[in-house]
Image (cartoon, rainbow, N blue to C red; front, side, top):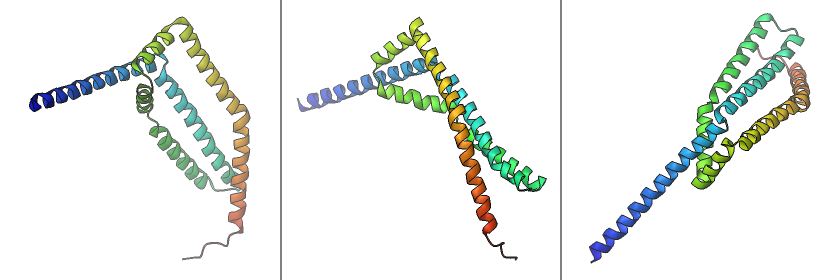
Length: 178
């Protein structure tokens, strides 16, 4: 009798585990579908492009003071090479497919299969498509706001910072000769 009870407990546990795994797999598939419906990878590609442009702009700002203080063309070329290397390294680190997979996993863990199904149905509907387009348009407007309002303040702050660092450097004694 005890063996029969143990078998029943094990069988129940195995069935529960298999059911949970199947539900999790279905949730993940639905989360992937939702990400496709809302164009997640394409949105992440746009974010990556915007970040790369912002990164390049920052690097250009760092190179500008070298030109102002009359650094040689060789030094400026090296600063530009280093800036390009920085840009490439940072931009390549953002894998849009990997980011989308992390996003999909979070959706699958946060929403039930039924909720994901309803979200897919909604975003596939004409109203859902319009809402998604409106959210994208609002995000573009937010980016424009950042470009118009925040970026100039950021550029000015960067210029002041770099100028202050250059001024401090000029106050330092020259390095000892070897």
